[in-house]
Length: 393
Image 1 (spheres, one colour):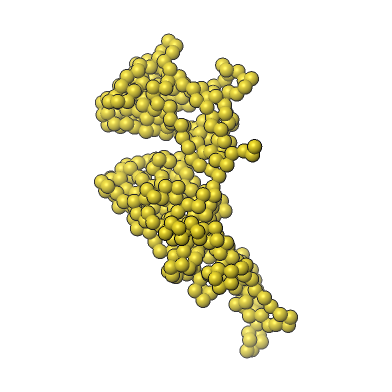
Image 2: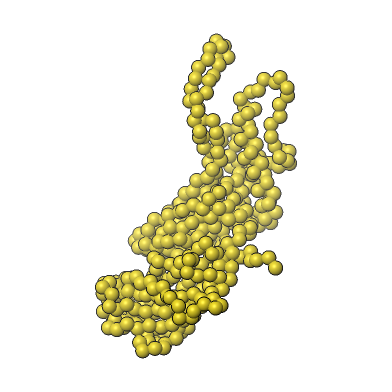
């Protein structure tokens, strides 16, 4: 599996009238896997040797939050210098420092984490290559001694794919991620709060921030060849304007400015942002809000709403808007609650460089607004994906 054994693309070779052996043909799939691994190692070798890290994500394999406890593992490839998956033609991991194995995925993959338990924990995500037989067909066989012919169904194709696994961490007051598994490449750590039913991108530390992992910090490094990154824009309460006949009330909590929304009348606030340049136009914008209540707010819901419009040059400023509302349960007295809107700002309604107008309000008349106390906004967040490669000049 090392380039030093040939340092080139490997394949089989046969002569005229040669009687082929089954191993000669079957060896072609090993050559195919080895060639891919060798090429990836050429890209990663200088990175690995200079960093001291044995695993290199060559491209992609970034973990991006999607919704609730679900994330998307992006297309990509990685190579490891910790061992090989072939020994004398037999598939299975053998730990030999400096030997190579690789893994790649060709489609984005959904990864679901378990909800939080009684205490915080940190889970790890790992990936490894697998060998899969498929395409079963009827084939004929000749007995080498008797010369008799028989038939049997057999798999005629072999594919090198991948599998992922989540190592669930031990809950505790200061949790750390579990130790990694030999023959697997670690891709991310995910912080799961106690009783959590959703996570966000801030809870995820993938290979872009592997130096912040709590375990195996010396294992995996990213060779930056990905064109998409996850960003977010924060609109703090102090950025919103209080205008019109029903403005929210500006306040403070500690050193934070708040916007206070009473439960007896609809109040609102306005802000302006933009749809970022090089925003990935195939994705929606996720919206979260940070808020609190002075008293315990776990016994009722607040219906928060956002109304938005995105406009560009020569479009109506007072055009049609889109309104989204959702009921959220608060946290304990004085504790910040970060709530995610299930409905996003849809890609069909926006374009890069649009001016984005946002009105935030509390829909106190909605049937789901059952909390009889003031809800206090700290900030609104827009999470989005961006193509960092830009455009040609």
